[in-house]
Amino acid sequence: MLDNPTARFPNNVIIDVLLAAEHQTGITGMGIHFGQNIRPSTLMDIGYALISCDNLADMIAFNEKYQRITQQIATGHLELGSQTSQLIWTPLYDDDPEYQRPVTEGTMAGYAFFGRWVTWDPDLQIEEIHMRHKRPEDISVYEQAFPYKLVFEADQNMVVAPTELFRRPLPQANPELVKILAARLDRALEALDKPQTVENQTFVCIQSSLRDGTPTIIRVAETLGTTERTLRRRLSEENTTFREVLERARKDACDLYLGEGKRSVADLALLLGYSEHSAFTRAFKNWYGVPPTKYVQT
Image 1 (spheres, rainbow, N blue to C red):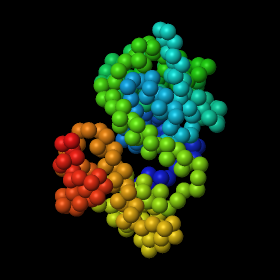
Image 2 (image 1 turned 180 degrees about the horizontal axis):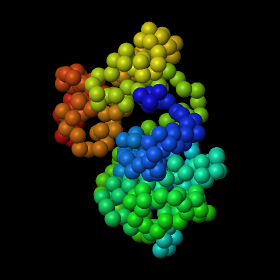
Image 3 (image 1 turned 90 degrees about the horizontal axis):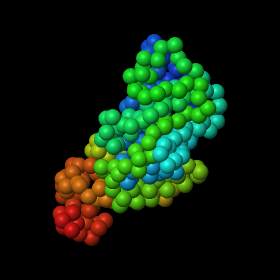
Image 4 (image 1 turned 90 degrees about the vertical axis):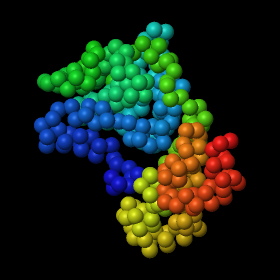
């Protein structure tokens, strides 16, 4: 299931895995180690949209709208003040701070390290980190990850920082790319409340593997835990084929890369899984009416 980008896990499974990792390794603060490694690719389309927002405040608002796609453990929202602001993390279900500790640690670390990464600022001006769970006996991993004031047994899980930090322009802002990704995420958000179709599962699997070369129906079927024959039959029952889904996924991905405005024709072909440049050129001309060289130059 870990190889399947459409798979979703119960919240308690995520927490139990982090707790089990601590028990097996003897390493405390496993959530912090996890949160330190969150990157845009971890969050898929949401991650790429976040780094393209105008500032951290917009980034947090964007994530708040779409975070249900990546997790339904808690919600994060920003309360802006005149001088100081709070980024608050509120659990949706289980309200036991001690059981929630691994994901709270991971989220606080994710906020801090992702914030440093996206702002290109290794000395992010965070003032305080508040967490609802009790102070662990050994807080060395906390002190390493968070060189800020630490507050345990707090009323809320939150990051406290100057308001100016949340308003600071991000170096990779790309409003056009955010619009393209928002349209894709709107569809993904809508799909959450509907029965998952085989076509959509296939589409997502294809998109997640395009950079590794042309996705084959055998490989996608294995990822989805089925056989090639069964996948073909189920797609046929939904009035489509693997080839049609593949082309739609490639076109959708191409729209995104063109929105970035920084990809060469060779890059586009590679990122869309084409091994032959002539095949990519034919497909591109079919999608946009002109060869890729002319489109990119325009």
